[in-house]
Length: 200
Ligand code: HEM
Ligand code: HEM
Image 1 (tube, rainbow, N blue to C red):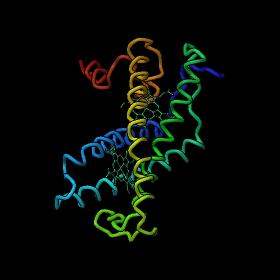
Image 2 (cartoon, helix red, strand yellow; image 1 turned 135 degrees about the vertical axis):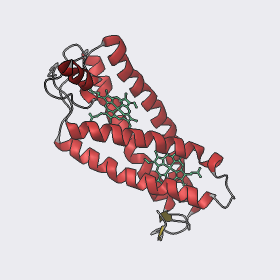
Image 3 (tube, helix red, strand yellow; image 1 turned 90 degrees about the vertical axis):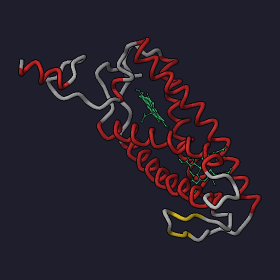
């Protein structure tokens, strides 16, 4: 496998990683808190669940755009210090995360179309294109629920691995997914430190 200690992700990769990653974390938390925010049978339930569905659909579209972008822009090669088994593990972990990122919105969307409630997309009623089949709805929502737990576990492992690279291995794996430093600003110095130096 090729290695390169200076290789890093592009600006759009970095933006999409953090924007979609943080939004997904919020959407997962929203999903798990749905019953606390608006218990079943209360008047607020429909509005809250449709907000979850609407945000989920937007995220699904963004995830697909990100994956299409990623297919045309391969990940940078690994730093030489990362052992081959860790490269393989990270490769499969990123695939598994990508699969969960797709299954979550697609499962929720498909399920909702086999229910008479369909989706109100930010207030606009999208009539369900499928028949009202409770068994099919339950199947897709069960996939949605199980994947939510698998996804959460993978994210915990993923964040743990990223933190290990930053704090224990102290290699470039974490920093290459951070926004690019301005040219001329040495590592370990923040931009305002440089400005302060220039003015002192
Ligand atoms: C990336 C997008 C999404 C994420 C991360 C997500 C996450 C979650 C989570 C964590 C739950 C709670 C699961 C549980 O309690 O076991 C949930 C529930 C739910 N989600 Fe999503 N969701 C997403 C997209 C969608 C979409 C697009 C729809 C439908 C259009 C949808 C419909 C639902 C419904 C109906 C429930 C409640 C299921 C129930 O009654 O138990 N979700 N979601
Ligand atoms: C919030 C804490 C997070 C941290 C600290 C973090 C950190 C990182 C780092 C450092 C990389 C680059 C690894 C490499 O060099 O290959 C990466 C890649 C990746 N992360 Fe995260 N991440 C976080 C959250 C998430 C979340 C919530 C997701 C949601 C699915 C996610 C999905 C991914 C994926 C799919 C990749 C592979 C990127 C690619 O090759 O295109 N990350 N992450």
